[in-house]
Length: 197
Image (cartoon, rainbow, N blue to C red; front, side):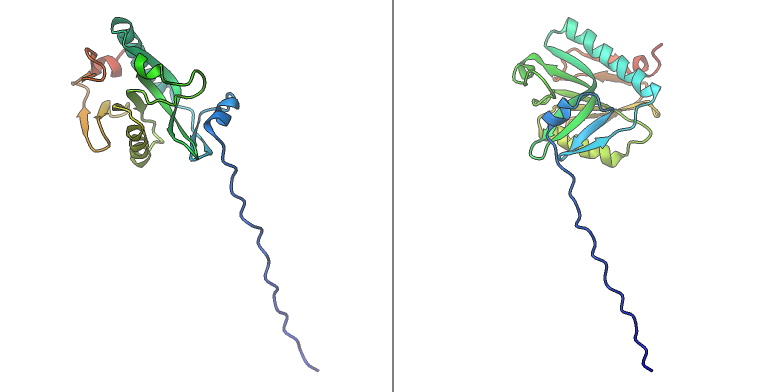
């Protein structure tokens, strides 16, 4: 009597399905889907921010709004402003606060996300942010023509002022934040941002 050894038949795996890439216009048309960004055509959902983040975002937005009234050279924007940093596939970054000159704004599309880079972008660090993520965003912002980025660290009460991905000045709580040639005449003590009541 002979015995036969059973041979396992290899299981055929289903083909990998690539996610459907969408455009920035399609993302905008979806309406409010919660905090998110578009990275190379794929939606990346973001954690809602904590209240300290929102408070500081509000203060900086208000300071830039007041500046825009006394120096009518542009417009302050806040509330996760969508900015195109890449096309085909699209990447749309959500800036906490931005400032765009009237000259650049006149070149932007009338609806949807900004397809023209603002002069200033403000990114406020959350506990879940990593510096590698921040560096990636910095490179994207400067590649499309942003002139200055303020990276605000509420925990350490510091602001990193970038003029390029490689050129950075660190400001501590006792220092003063100035707008240089991007926002002529803008200046504020960091104590007004981190200890405002």
